[in-house]
Length: 111
Length: 323
Image 1 (cartoon, rainbow over the protein chains, first blue to last red):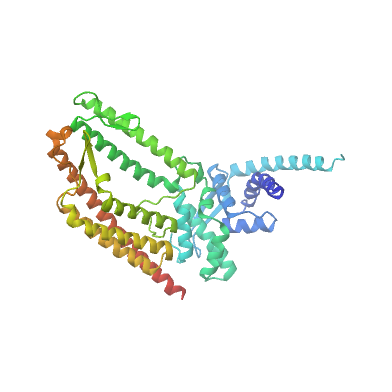
Image 2 (image 1 turned 120 degrees about the vertical axis):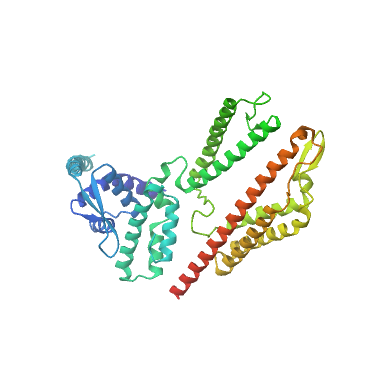
């Protein structure tokens, strides 16, 4: 049960950060599967059931734009960050760095 | 869904049931593309069904994948929405018919807490309109409560002929078999308890003598229905069960079509005081309604039969391609 609780906390921590990671990865035009692989290579394993809803949410907020490409072996939905998305990414990146430094301070402080 | 893989198609159809309609196409295309990309990376440009099955199983339950798109934020979820509309419409039609019969006969009819006919001998059009609106609000409210609970419980209800799939769980097949069995028992042994109206302590049957020669056919059809549902429960969806299902549905459609054009099987008997002057009109109305129901049921069964035959061809096709 303790392990379950730890896993749940990790999921909670990752939830918000994944949006930041997805936004960052979408600075270059990409599609779902490639994004999934790229995040996994960076050590951020993400389930499909998490990634695709995040993409849709970011798109509905106007932070990403999408385009179906039909010319390849199969239809693929490509995503790319918008100008609004870049502004949000910059703001969220600053927030993340501040939080990370603060948490690092807390963790490194002598009891 | 255009994929050539039956495994992927079945999985996507299952996801589709839980998705809101306006997002369905986009989400399914994207999931299909994702699975095929992953399969191609694992097993090359022409992945086999086993690879695709392993991938869709790793993605998780279709309902869970669909709910991650926000499908669970609905009071009445996409998995039950069509059934909600269909059954609410049926309830409303039945409710309104009761109101109209009540108005025609002057009887006071109660449905749950609501009295559905007016105290006046004959209500004005305005009163009738008010009653119709009241009935609509009551029925929609009642069904929303039921279907919201079904949504929370993760239920998926398929409305007839709306989804091109025949598969059912063993439990669903057994419950259909049980239902058909209960109708057989009611028709054979409980006729004098179930199909009756009572007035002043006297009980009158509403079944006409025309039923007697048709009863063996009806019971035979119901016995066949029990048999095919048990076959589904035991064997699952196979060519044999699909063929048996198609034959039973064809027999049912033919039987109902014959019953629809035959003499009335249900009628209010003469001698009912509360119905006296209107008895012929009510019986004519009843005959028309039962004819309509029989025809609608015959068409539904015939459509079901066609669906099974198509499914049979699909199953045969996927067997051939995988062998």
